[in-house]
Image 1 (cartoon, rainbow, N blue to C red):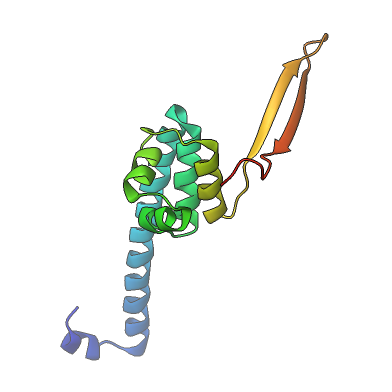
Image 2 (tube, rainbow, N blue to C red):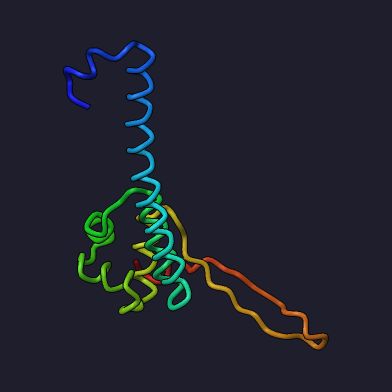
Amino acid sequence: MSAEANNRVSPKGKAAAQAARGRARRSEGYREASDEYAAIRELRERNWIAAHIRERRYELDLTQQEVAERAGTSHSFISKLEGGEHIPTIPVLKRILAVLDEELLIGIERRVANDEPEREIARVPDLVSA
């Protein structure tokens, strides 16, 4: 709508036009988010660690470059990690998760006599240098 045409619209019409533009912007953001989460769901089937990191980075509105710089690694590494091409070492994973405000836990599961799983979960000790 041109500025001249917009000036001829009633106050209610202006509000409606502004609301429509706002909905269009939100719809675009929603489509982008839907596409991103669809890609994350597909990635989760192949590599859940990569999917988790990508999803958390997206939630925090961080770029791969920002995560890389804060974790002391390269943009290329984060890109390949999120693409499922790299599996990080525990120290690197700890640094990446720290950037994402998360902590690495390790779980161990074994089957006991009645086939019930027995689980233990522990923090990765600080002895594993980050």
